Image (cartoon, rainbow, N blue to C red):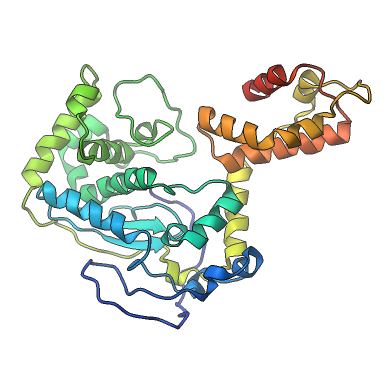
Length: 351
């Protein structure tokens, strides 16, 4: 996805040292490195600058997935091989055929820290990683062959110049004009994302997209992509490479600062005042045998976070922060649980 606000300043790289090189053939992938920080505590690791981690793609958990992506492209005789690199988020720089992969996915220790700090890891499983990688590949193919300039492309997907804010689009969950690949009906957010999602579905091995999307208007887009990729087969890309957006070796902020900003960005979306709803969910009156509301919220916080994030398709960290504020306020108001546990859980989820 195309990022808007840079989290860091682009400055020079300070190397970590202690490198052990092995030669790899993949474009854009550097040599393997030993990582002394793999056994460090969270607090020690959080005080380390991202650029000083000395991260490499070669030999990392990420490399086999990139190999697989290139194999999927070769099976379709697509010659574009975008450079993949480690950065702060999943991204493809605007109009640049390169793929940025979150640095936390390069090593199990960093994935564990991401889980601790953000409660989940985007692309942390083989399935979700490949879904995201194919999506970003859709952007890269679009830019490499400048497909967005074509009249038919604009007719089907819309102008790429359309205003873009992934936080402000209003998805229609039942629309059949768009494919369903990433969560949150992401194809509906922008024409560029619509194409990337359609391409990802088309590229997915074993996907019988003609059958799955039979009767959908989205099938026209898939058939267009199928025809377009047959035309691109065997042809070299018109554009190769470009400037990397926020490469990990230029991120001078510490992991602590990085996560502080990331938590703030994901946690500030719910500024509301909770008293009216808390007084509907809980009671000011209770006995010693009644459970305090804040203890109930603390006890079921993890369950509620997972449930609401799953069904509501929210970030776990966002949900957890809302529950944390409710928990704190319920404690200040000294509220009690007045209804049964299941009923209370259901009402909180609805709220």
